Length: 312
Image (spheres, rainbow, N blue to C red):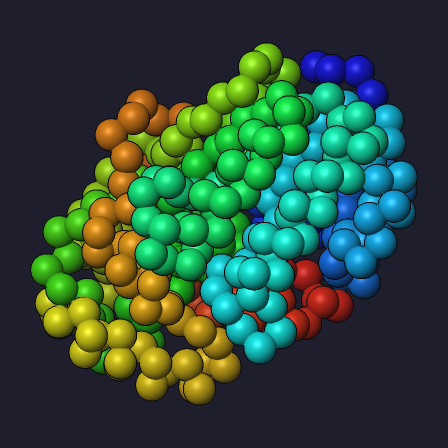
């Protein structure tokens, strides 16, 4: 492991929290940069908490001074009145520049599968632009490209299970044959840390050991949860319109039109070797009593910055 302390964005959030746990278990001195300093801190004095001071690049560079590795998990899932892709791109470039000024040795950056193949979709275009921006810094780096993450406090798999538990039918976008390769968040964190110690510039697909068609995933989860629901193939525009009707009920954005397009194009799939070992089916069986019992809100997590992720 490189000498010096490590810095991770969002250690009080989702992926960042698991990375922090694993680093602390290894005895690595750790600092986090966060937009949510008032969230419950499960690490106590073991982690140094500093703000993600995008509005003060000099201060941001000072918080990175002396860091061996920066793990960047910062991003937004969709455009909202309080946050946007454009803002996230600008902020991340400020972070990369601050890391360069501070002399950070290596950056391990979270992107998305097929980031360079869908510039017509805002999420992917933004991730593509940031991959290029990271390369332009000249800092040695790894770019990890997950598609779907699952595990404690996840959103997608949890909310599929929630819909199966609570909705009278489950609508699948189109024919449901498009595929995905979910990766457990613990495996993702392990991969991030492994890449902190690598050399050279690396880009890797971060995918789990199981692949599913989307409709197969829904049927598998329904069986594990012992829930009987009609699972219906519905034209994607109609299914999306139905999901929008539920947004006001859950006070969230369940899925965006661009996410539907990415999903149905198979952009959450990869033919590359698995980078994790935890099977979604086994994990779901172990957590069937709690999986999907509560809805997980993306907007809530972005706007309520005083509660822990698993409470929102």
